[in-house]
Length: 389
Ligand code: NAD
Ligand code: UDP
Image 1 (cartoon, rainbow, N blue to C red):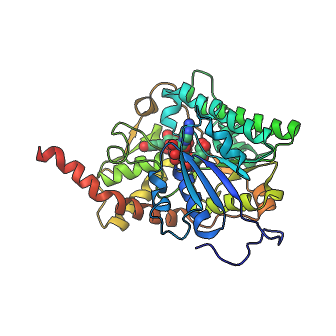
Image 2 (cartoon, rainbow, N blue to C red):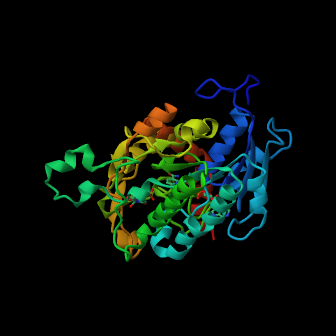
Image 3 (cartoon, helix red, strand yellow):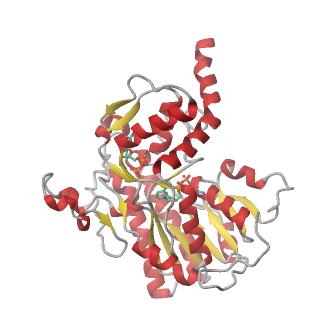
């Protein structure tokens, strides 16, 4: 519930209620951000998306304590003239809209590039022309591969953080060749970042760019065949959850050797709220938002998720919990991967004093409890159906 005492920013100033145009509010991150803004702040949200399933619980019934502070606008930003009006009557625009599942980058590269670059152009234009603040969601994937990945396997420099820690103001963006269409997403995100940065430098746009490093938690993506297409390939959390729910082996792409750092969505949302309410400290900055302490290989993630799921479901794990698949088989031609992603936290620490709190085990425990509660019964029924027919 929003507190009645005045909210103060990090410098002790009163935070006035604001109107936020949130594009992509119906997605994973948007749903958590809307929830936080409704429950803990007095701000108003104009929630823009083509779907609203993940925020339905915030929109209905009318008796909710925040009724009137959140309005859903079903529109596609590709081609809807209402967008400029919504941005004009807001104090801040947050753009989360994107195609952002790796299975799409090499199989639907045109849609990926249009979604992440072309469709973001009007948002940027309307913010710039109307002197409105913009928080734009980019990705850690703009870093691509680490410098260390190009060194010989036995090079001692691979152990030197200078060769793998990803720093906003220092690290280069290293993508594979053009025929590796995996990088269509990263490249589109990089170009929109550069455009936003240039609007700031040349036209005074007040902006913040967020680079999420594998945020995970409840409501991420979909479970194939239950609340998404049977043949769909979501991001790794939902892929592995789906395998665990169906008692199938978890598929390790190219041996599961890639490394990732995972941060709990609720920790990450705290960082976004600090950006929203501290414009003086957030504007003009690009922020890594991740948890450097939660690093695992994808294989280790699979092993940990198997153990955690066993604990929360009360079921023993299956005899062969993982199998190896090639990336070509799993994602198709043109897939490539980021080898390792550890965020440097200096800038977000200095500007906003933010630090992630939740360990990987704890965040998997609460997330897999949610997955089990939400999907186990539906999966049981889906599996039983063909047998009954
Ligand atoms: P998501 O797919 O759950 O949410 C994106 C939302 O945007 C969806 O609800 C979708 O319907 C909406 N959308 C897409 N195109 C639209 C359009 N043309 N008009 C209106 N709505 C549209 O993804 P997410 O995980 O919530 O990610 C949000 C942002 O953060 C994206 O920009 C993504 O690239 C970035 N990001 C997220 C992560 C992560 O860890 N979740 C990592 C890196 C980057
Ligand atoms: N991955 C995997 N099995 C799966 C799904 C994904 O091994 O069923 C791997 C994928 O190849 C990548 C990592 O898990 O190395 C993370 O994938 P995700 O889809 O979450 O996106 P990314 O972190 O690459 O943006």
